[in-house]
Structure formats: structure tokens, C-alpha cells
Image: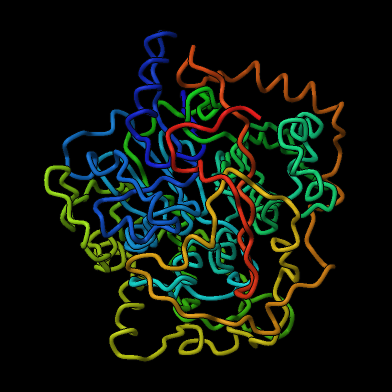
Length: 527
């Protein structure tokens, strides 16, 4: 099976599909599936644009609305995860995943599906320590804080994915797993992006949660975006008593001319399997098993673990659970094509600049939750807001599982505000102070959010086997086995834009970013 992998989409669906069709014609091939690694920007109308964490002047209606309205249809089955520049109100309608347009499927906060026997998982958002242990409490209208925290990874999603035991073929994350740069050509990476150097040397670049998932899941492929640079790595996992597994890692750029934003890989599949997107039976069992761990408040808490404090810590599926779910589904795992237009679509001939963000219950999620006995997180958040109350299923159903809010987190350090890197490829946070439609509430950081200078997580030493020189050949092998392509051949070369810096983890500190090129169609002149 030929799979096109794309880095940061930034709403440029027309350009991405056109590039794939050009490559198909040029190479006389057929792409079966498109995977997008975040910043998808599923913006349906002007209200959705106000829910993206970017300044007003960079909120642009790209081309997704054409696919939402039915004016166009995605020519290739497309799967995507969320990044840190999304229409968060739209994606929050589909916490367990769902169709955002015909033939375009969102994996949810975290999700696993199958396509022609290929198992594909993903986690949306980026890692921020100060929100990691909170519930999904955000909803429109967002404050200047919640419009960002809405796309921050939560420990409940990582915990669910760590219940997975069966092999994973492909996994998607927006930000990179921390330490992955040690398994590729690090010198070449730093030649392109020298401002990564301090974080690479301190081993603070990337997500420690994603690194933990990489160690646990050990997928054959791991694809990421976020840092706006192409980078390949090869990690050989070490396990006693088992055959060693390996992960091919690939990060790609954003969709701009002369940038390496798209790559086609060939993945083994089972041609006898359905060519329809299917639910993953193990993942469904995990969702059902963990439904009582739901938290839709901003309270912080830890996941259950085998430390003597919790009555249950293993939520993995059993063969009996899988057979029960299969029986309930009539042994048909096909994901229904039940997309429907749920809010008015953008009309370029009649723009509605005063349209307010929507907060609705998506019928896909209602159907999914009714079918599998789950709780619609988005609906529960809205209900609590109307009632002015709080809901924590963990406290209602198993008080022991919530843990104390004073307990230390799995990751005791938020090093994002310690970085000296300034990324001219990112927006200026100061420009977001007076955004239309976003109320401003200043929140002071609590003492538990103050980072220390020690204790950050690294990958296990047993996995650290590569040097830069050794990885040159591994990268070359991967490059030869996969077809790399860029859009806009023959155009003027672009400036190498710099990294998406991690956001500020403390309300009282702001990071000044100087170049506002992220949401323009082209870059500035070369340095």
C-alpha cells in the first residue's frame, strides 16, 4: 500500500491533493491513503476561525470549508490528528474521532483504526506539563488561556494508549518524541536548525509523553510534524527474550513551495481485508474499560498505577472483552460513513465576520457513545457549564483512581519556558492579547506548575544505540526506500524557517517571536 504522509497541513488541502495527483501521474502510481500530522485546520466558517490560537490577522479561511460543504470531495481517504493550530471547537465535537468531511477522518484526542489490515494510531496536540494532568474542560467561548490549553495533550490519552498490547504499524504525533534526534543524523539537523542545539544538548526538545509511547508501542513507523523540518531516524528497540523491534521515524515540513512537506511510503498490507476504514477492536475495549476515568474539570490528577494506592491499574483488553464487543457489533467493524453538515458553512459571497464560535453536540459522537456505552466529553463539559457544576467520573466511580492533586506528575519538569530558542517561524503571543471573541482572564501559575531544573524524562538507556555517523547509513537506507517530494518545483528557494518554539508554560512570562510568516503563503527573503 502506498501512503502519502504530510507534515503541517495549515488548511492547504487543495495544494496537498494537487501535489499527490501530480506525483501519481508523474510516477504512474496510485496513493491509497493520506496521513496528516497536525495543524490540519478544519475550519468550517468564521466562528471556527476565532477558535484557532493565532492572531486575528493570521486567521485565514483556507480550503477545508469546500470539502465540508460538499463543493469538493477528498480524492483520497485522509486521516489526521490535531496539532497546536486548530479550530478547537470543531475537533472537540469529536473526542473519540469522526468524519469532519466525506472521506476525511479525525482520530480524536487519541485513537486507533485499521485500513486494509494496517493498524494506525495517533495522539493529537502538543505536550505541556502544566496542563498534562488536567481533564478536557475547555469549550467555547475560550479565554486566552483555554484557547491554547484546549490542544494540550492529557495524561488520560497517554494512559489509554499504554493499555495497547497488540503490534502497531503506524503512529502519528504532532510534536516529536523527546530524544528521537539521537537516532538520526543529528549533525545534519543542527546544520539546518542551529537554534535546536541547546535543547538537543540538554535533551529537552520534544515531548516526553510521546517518547514514553514510542517505547511502549514500538510501531513500525512513527510520523510527526510541528518543527517544520524534515528529519529521519531509525530506532532499534531492545527487549530481553524477544526479537528486537525497530521504528522508522520521519518528521516533515509544512505545506509551502520548495519545502519537504510530503513523502510517499510503501507499507505492507493485507489485500484480503476491507478497503473501508475500520474500528480497532482492542482500542474499543480500552475505551470501554477506561470510561470511568473521565475528568472534564481543570483539576489535576494522576492515572492509576501499581503503587498500592489504586484498586485497579491495568485496563488492557482481554479476549473475553474483545469477543463481547465483536458480538455486540455483529462482527462488523466498519466505521459508518455518517458525516453530516452540523453548522452553516462559510460562504465567500456572503462572509459573516461577526459569526460567533459554535459549541454543539455532534451526532457522530452521540451515536458512537450510545453504541459503546461511553460518555460524550464535549456534551458533559457543556452541561456542566450550563449547570455551573463539576463532573469527575473517577471520583464518582472509583475515588481511589483519581489520586491526590498534590501527587507529583509523571513528568516533573516543564522545560519549555527554559528554552533560549527564538523561532521566527511562529506567531507572536503578545499579538493575541485583544483577540476578537476571546475573553481575557489572567491566571497566575500555582506552585505545582513551577518547573525545576531536574527530573525530565529521557528514553531508556537500553534504546540508546546510535551515533550520528552510524545513523547516516540508516537514514540513507530509509531515504532510498521511500519517495520524497516537494511542491512547487522551479520556484525560488525559500528561507529555512525556524522551529515552532514550545509555548510558555507560565501565565506571567511571555516569549517574543519575531517573524509572522507562519500563516502567509510564502516566506521572507533568505537570511
